[in-house]
Structures are given as structure tokens and as C-alpha cells.
Image (cartoon, rainbow, N blue to C red):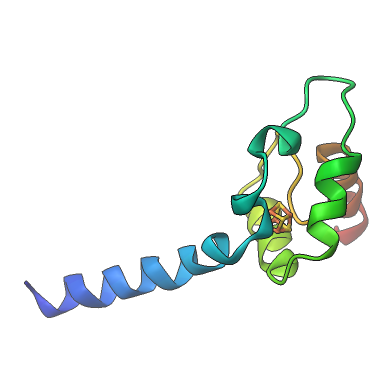
Length: 86
Ligand code: SF4
């Protein structure tokens, strides 16, 4: 394989690694994408103890993720955070 391809692959893997360490990977993923008006409490509880919370939140913010709980914040909370940041 071309050397550059290998470098690119390594980079992609490094970027994905935090998701594998995310606690939500071991729990019910549905809790992280509640129905409109549904409870986000369970998901947030999991995020509190998650070691990649920061990476997760940054990923969601930079990719403009609209749905679900990321890094312990709901979409509304992330919107607020973004507004404050600009
Ligand atoms: S912070 Fe929450 S949503 Fe993000 S990986 Fe950890 S448990 Fe999952």
C-alpha cells in the first residue's frame, strides 16, 4: 500500500479512537437519542463518568451534530454553548 495511504489511515483511526472508549458504547444507545421531549437524564449520567467526554463534545460541536446527547450536553445546551463561544 502507498505510504501516504497508510498515514491517512492511521490518522482516521486516531480520530475514531475516543469513540471506542466512550462509555455509551457499552450502554443503551437509545438513551442518547431520546424522542422529542424525552428524558436526557440517563444519558447525561453516563457522560459524567466518561473519560472521553471532552473529545466527544468537541467532535459534536465542530461537526454540528444536531441530534442526541454528546459529551453530556443536549442539542439545546450545545447551541447555547456555541452562541457563547462566538
Ligand atoms: S461523553 Fe457521553 S456521549 Fe460522549 S462518548 Fe462519552 S458517554 Fe458517549
